[in-house]
Image (cartoon, rainbow, N blue to C red):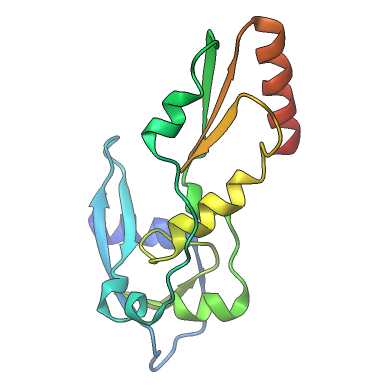
Length: 166
């Protein structure tokens, strides 16, 4: 399958096409990157202006040391990976307008939080931190929810509690 066809398939999956625009204040070029599994990822190059105009969102991303500090006493571990993590969060209309990309098929805008926006990691971390909030033995690290327990019963209870919230 040619690259343009692959880009078109991704556009159909990830982006809400909008009417063709003559111009956009934030139309960013696209970059196609290959994932480890061989599939392609469509990325917008927001370094061309939008990221400079966006405010930083200060929200703590856990450090590896913080993650490891939760391990003592736990013997059972699991990791829930949130696939295409950022794309799971819907954008409001005013934010969608800023995510316009320029493609060979015209201008499109994302309807979900997109990788490459400067505040995206902090927005995502803050949102996903809420899922296991208050459940002991859990930690969110970017697009992974870590669940741990000292024994099978405790672990199963924690896992069930997290799954109920997702």
